[in-house]
Image (cartoon, rainbow over all chains, first blue to last red; front, top):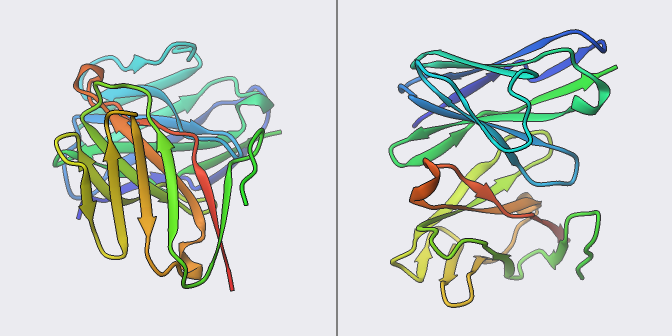
Length: 113
Length: 113
């Protein structure tokens, strides 16, 4: 089946630094990937739609200059949290379209100290 | 029982009983619905899906019911097992949103022995 690999699974960074999260489709090509953020005891909130070879589409209220998305190939999308602050601490999850369905990565727990 | 507010609604069931998890979706134009299971610290795991031209679909131990009149979705789990303990989310998609999924608020299922 379709597998999406997300890395790292956990990361701790200092305030003001940047963190990159990778999302790879292992056995299929993904022209579209989605990035979600999930705070404790809450649902998944879509941050942006990542499109291979073009600019990402951000949801309302999501700062595109803070959450940089790059989808340079059909198997890799990256999310970079720039100038991270403690309020950016969250669980970030990527997803990809495959065969009309959706496959999710295992998530990245980001802690900003 | 159930609790609402800042925490996820919780459904407690005894092992072996049937569980029914409910979801109210938001968009009457949504054409595709998915139930996901999420365990702590992991990404969502696909359980079952249903298209808007159906009102019932069955899988192994799970059944999804769709009532488009009241925009309601339910997930029934037969003979609930301890391994079913997790948070369950419904998600909806409609064609006008570039295949984006919108997630519901989620329900925590606790299976007691």
